[in-house]
Image (cartoon, rainbow, N blue to C red; front, side, top):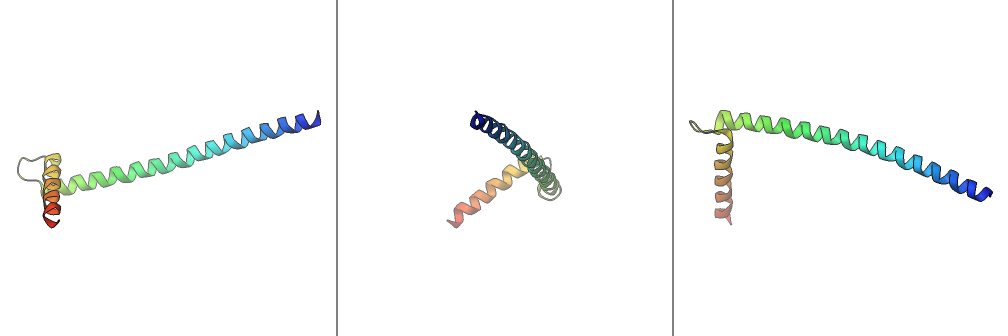
Length: 81
């Protein structure tokens, strides 16, 4: 009988420990995810501003300029091979 009480108490403690760990894990992962999204969004804005200011041709959108630049880069890489 005493053993079963110990086993039940141990299982209860284990559930609480696992639950607490999962909460901490979710908080940490959520924080890093938020930081990652913020950094990537900031980089994308800077990249778009640079392309818009220095790399677009008259009447060309930022997306069109990026596609054109990517195509040129791929062509250059293929020539090097």
